[in-house]
Length: 176
Length: 176
DNA sequence: ACCGTCATGTAATCGGTTACATGATTCT
DNA sequence: AGAATCATGTAACCGATTACATGACGGT
Image (tube, rainbow over all chains, first blue to last red; front, side, top):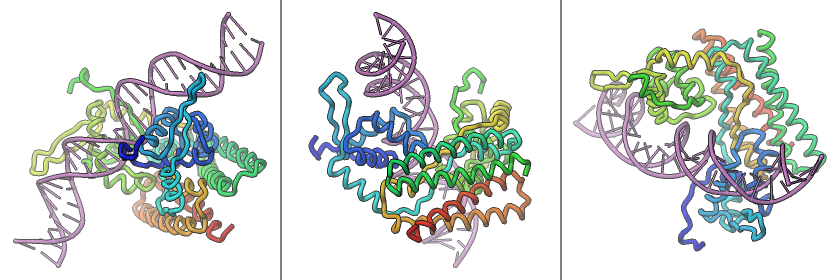
């Protein structure tokens, strides 16, 4: 593809996730991405697998990724970074942001609209406890594998939040 | 509109926010909704004002809201709940959910992809401190206005999370 | 050889975002 | 009266979700 028919596309958070993961892997198929997402960002929000097929296509159209199809039976699509993609990713990574999170929490939403906390709190507490345990298991795993420090930190941030949630819903279970 | 040409629509979290706020207000214009959002859910995630025009239309088409236009000069649209809307909202509120949050945090994302924490942490810390102060101000305000307990709780959950963030980024500022 | 699960993809739709535009108040 | 801000809306586009579908592989 010549630079002239490169389509102008928008880079969304999802785009950077894909670029970042491809960068970590060197080359990746959508399925590889799916696995990597499940082990990392997927812990905090879901990306449907179909988007891990469409987003790389978009990024390829924009000139950020390079797509190669295998020639063997499965003919999977293999993506890797172009120079442009590498640069865009590096720029994004190195620019600090003061943007805050977006938190969509159906439990808190229902609470705010007046659901009975006695009914809701136990269910949420249980779910958050499970999630907390999951994250702690991941942390243990990462430590064993000598995962880089910054990745560990992200999981630890998640653990901190889950602890906070557990405290919060525990209070409500007890009737505050 | 007769029930037969009621369009089948999906109720998303946004739908319930609109239904819930209309319920609290009795009647509301999109602009009223905008104000209410800013004072509540808006603290945790943004809803563009245009959606507070389109979503009520969708809900009206689905038979959940009733739309009346003022006859005076401004001819604003006034929405109120239909029986169907009231029922859908009540059902949603009273059904506990074990669904967890979705957290989109650009700061954590960059951290995970290896940004320099020394650069990022101060910026994030500052932003979270400001947000924390905001939420605390809202809490004070709500207490003075005798806001219902459950609404206070939501803000307090937010405060808990902001404190956690402040702890987290503080550690990183200090170089951990 | 068959069956279940893992893996790989496409199509259609729709909610949500961005951009554009203008009318009504309020303040100086 | 003019400027600035508040308020109100529409239109176009696109990223994201849902649903549909099939191919490959591993175990029994």
